[in-house]
Image (cartoon, rainbow, N blue to C red):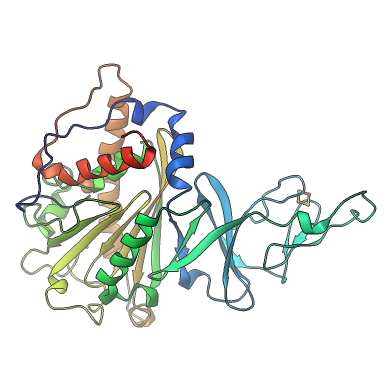
Length: 374
Ligand code: FES
Ligand SMILES: [Fe+2]
């Protein structure tokens, strides 16, 4: 979902949608994983999910299973979630707390310490030339950004780093580091990840696809403040009498403490290339994370965060917001799947974009450049 309408700075400049092969060619995803998903920070979890020593989360990073743990000194460490012996997945759970100091493989019991060093390998002592120090876990880079844990398996693109720093400043009033997760939705969408990204980048479709959303934030009342680069987006104004995006239009929590009176009347939508969207409401923050599974299949996780004080209240109920976005998400996935089905047709060809789709055009340009196709 999102933005685009009346601002003078928006024009699609005669852009057309991407060529059919970008949505349908199975081999393309390998190149995207190598060139893009390995080189850009991917959101793996929120810090509140891995707070305790030995706490861990597992996630998908550029198509690979990874594991992030907080070691006993409080540092975050990231590894490929794959045993160095015969390659079993080390941890099956999505999140939790390690029972021991070590990560123990469930297959033959090789164990790794908090730095990923192999510290136990039963029955390997008599194997000629076996050197334990050569068989530690393969590491990934992990940082904490604005409260979220991001991972990268290659050298991160410097331009994304700079854009993330700016975005953290721009969203500081929501104090995302202090928020806690109130709800989570998951979807398996039968569409290429770029179709989902493009769809979120325009509100041209809102009147037809999201009548409820369009009542709360009319699509004509929006602005793009970031219209090129790897972070894109801007605010949409809440209609008169509407407090937030929810089934009723009423807030699910008091406004986040530091928000200006202007921000309390808006919802800010940002996309972060290539894999996550940040939707900042007056009373909660929502994140979408995309994990491409195949050229025509994307797993999407949609998480909701609120201030801890709101969660602690006896009468706290995020359902009106969660239900609203679940409905909106499903409406979006449906049209995304229609595009994917259309892209299978041999007559599918790039079509002309409206000026309401300038951010879609900006995403496409950035994507082609990141892939080295421009
Ligand atoms: S595969 Fe992990 S110990 Fe054998
Ligand atoms: Fe939408």
